[in-house]
Image (cartoon, rainbow, N blue to C red; front, side, top):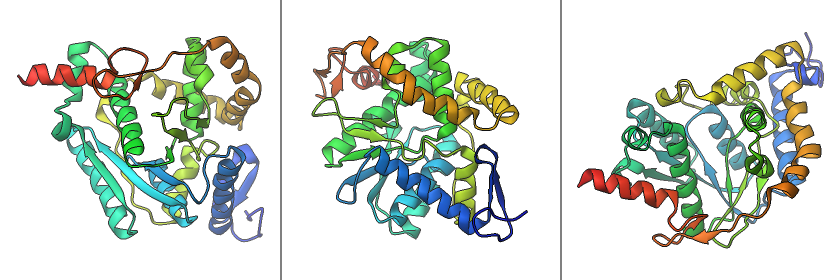
Length: 302
């Protein structure tokens, strides 16, 4: 098989595009996808300070690497949530990349800094560990970006992630979430930093190929607390559909952006934003979820 672009030996097949590429041409394709997403969605420019959320997995490491390669002003941020070896290994990968590429990084440890134990909090509140972990991370990403003067927060969410999230929200008719799902979440309050997803048109497979071809270290482990998460099931369902009809995920997501999201934006209404009475960060309640979690953690410690 020959590369569609240059005619050399092909290394990777992208069925949804009916294309096969050699390693070099795949990297051109990948870079063009990212750059097009950034420019088309007006995510950021070369003057902006960008805080990149890095978990240590293939997607976020691919994003960190390519934005550095493209010359953007990028700082990584990693949150260690205290999940044993999984968190330790993830942080190690992030720190190795930072040292190797002379790339600045901010590390936060929720257990050491805030006494958060994800498992204990989940048991006490009878909530999933994923929802608690997500609330903590969203708070800290925004707070650090705001405090340190970053213009935008970039995450490594890929096409598989976004399609699975959309499927879950449609199945439950979560109108509020459907209204907000977008590759760009603009700032709607002076204390909310703009958030973007430059990899939203690229799949997990493509991100894996990109980090592999560029020799980028990443942590392959799966979070042990995510077992049974509904998002995993939604991805499996979409993967099955994709096998039968390549391009299903992309059509599902992009057509939602083009045709469906506007409807939900009109119907969702306006959420009243406040500032937390304890920390001053943005919330819809008197006290934000992060401060409520912190109070619970402090009570347990005492």
